[in-house]
Image (cartoon, rainbow, N blue to C red):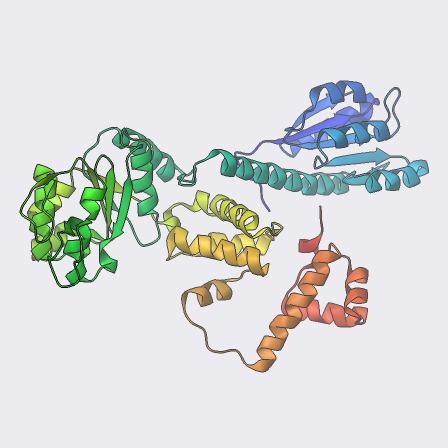
Amino acid sequence: MELSPTHKKHIAIIDDNADIRESLAELLELADYVVSAYSSADAAFRDISADYPGVLVSDLRMPGMDGMSFLKLMQQTDPELPIIMITGHGDIQTAVEAIRLGAYDFIAKPFQREGMLETVNRAMEKRYLVMENRALKKSLQTDTANAVVGQSLPMQALKAKISKLAQADVSTLIHGETGTGKELVARNLHEQSQRRDGPFVAINCGALPESMMEAELFGHEAGAFTDAKKVRQGKFEFAHLGTIFLDEIESIPLSLAVKILRVLQERKIERLGGNASIDVDIRVIAATKSDLKAMAERGDFREDLYYRLNVVQLFLPPLRQRGEDILHLFRFFMTKAAERYSLPLPALPLDTIDTLMQHDWPGNVRELINMADRYVLTDMLLDQQSLDSWQEPSQPLSLPNMMEQYEQRLIEQALSQAQGSIKQTYEALGIPRKTLYDKLTKYGIDRHHFREE
């Protein structure tokens, strides 16, 4: 994967030989690394903590604390910190032992500059993913279940507006496509407001039959209609001292709009079949995916209700306008899914990342959440065809197609267990090496995606 342009690449060089330190520092600084150089392992150990965001390159033979001792101590500090050992030809056996103890890799002197850079870059990609996953897990522990996730400029602006509007306690109209998180934003407005200790009542107007809508919103007295055996509070009354969220407000029938208008104007309701006015202290938040103003101009929505609801507006950007957030969100929801299902977090190969970034996400965040769950549950590599088939029902697969999918899955599982080793994979599958290579070519499987780096 490519690191974000804003992500600084850190590296620490530990070597008692000044010439090697300077040569490595020059090479890595030209590759945009932020270099820290140490002449002893003791000095490096005092400086480097478990949250160090980079890679270590350490000589194996040094006076005082040697490379092996340094490796063991750093493994105790952070076993996921990539440490590359530099060794002479006479120390290859010791370097192999270092790999067994947890070193990321070793490079023999005299090392090739290109080989060193390639190894360091791979180790840096691993460290970046480790640090990002830790940050995601931390956010899962510290954020509320209803946190608005995203660091793109549109989302930063939206979060700032939510914080400001939460204190305003005025009717708010949220605009957004399906799946952009309108209810999530409404919950955040409620939880950051003075009404946070009161109820948050969400109702999807589009999911209610018109015949039930009035009783659901306003409640009813006993005997108001045939099945009304006893008094029932409506959603407006139940939301007293809290917030009511009316999703798909465009579905409200014109005949009911005037009663909702009265709630907004007078903060009073009357139950169906009753005469008494009941005071309600509520904040009304409505949401729509339609152009309510245009609907009002056509006579499909009450204009006075539109203006009462539309004291302030929030526009939620679709996911396709939040490119910076796609990968972060996918990893975030993958982490949540892995914890929910008690499954390991699957790796994200480069081609899968490219597919995620190029997809239009017509279902927005809701589609992305479903896809993250599916990816964790099946550990299947995603391509554009699989994403498209998620949106539109595909034709039933033939038996040969199903057998090929099953065979591909078995090969991918074996590669994953063998961490990309060809020999271990064909032995586990009980097939010749050439057959395995033919299958990898047929299914477009890159074994390097399964290496544990």
